[in-house]
Image (cartoon, rainbow, N blue to C red; front, top):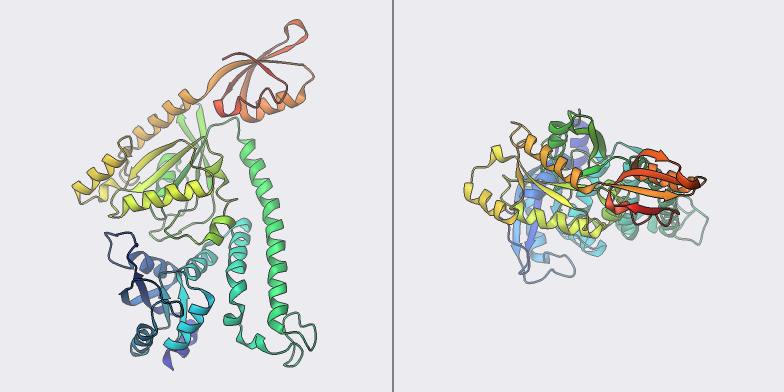
Length: 434
């Protein structure tokens, strides 16, 4: 059938794949101001597929076998053949059995939302950490789906030529592959633990400086804001998940007063939980930042829903308690004044900006400068002159100024954020003055 052979032919020609998008509207689904499946179409475009049709079905609950129902699946399969579609993309997470049953009924390739996002992450990952995180997420996602992905593995190992890690007759090859995947997952986790420890050391090495992190829904304009604030030469592309790697640049919020500003990976609705756990190391910048700049696309009709998605994600990664400033970005693209007022009512202290025109950028810089000034405090710490641990801690997390030695003790004048003061006594110091 054409639906089976077209992907191979188009890959050989270098053409983009043709996709039919499928969504199910359930009674408890959140309302969206966008056209149905608009975000899925953007994801498909980022992954290299053109949307040729969108099909939305209303259901009381998902079908346990095919998610969308056997009749609708057959209808989609017929439509796919008529349009010469390469694949069907479902805007929901499918169980391995649901995906397998859908492929049987439609007669073609079916992927779900998680698989699509994973494909994008594979394409976009550039650093060693990002690549390892994506591979780990892929392995965790694929483990229960090996039977669907590699149907030839049902054969007995050693009976059909060399297999992956074949251990001889009597053992199914799929079980061998599962063992190999689990081993790879274990190795990737160990490798990521080492990388994460290195990333934490890097983050702590900047402890004497104030750190801020840009967070937000994917494609909200965070990288554009980073460039506008710091002049950083970063990738700016009007596609979802343009970059997966954290970029950190020095930002001079006042003459002689630099802070570190990091751009983190964007969040998205229904972010696969495999990726949330895998990307914790990348999101360390947000978890340990002194301040978050939550960038929202003021021109997006679903901006309020996107804000809630990001706030929930920040809670999930342990960053809910980090103070934040809301940046209402891309106000130059706002066409609906009423919609903007609704956003301003939701975020009354938000700063309206346009990273393209420069509107609001000075106000944002002043707001951050005021916050930095208020958040750091000057204290005097007394300790034993031989306590290297205390001095090391203060230099790591604060800015040590004058040092005096009255009466066989050392007095250190330190400028430090309040969040780090509590551990000074653990390091053997006594706070004399706040």
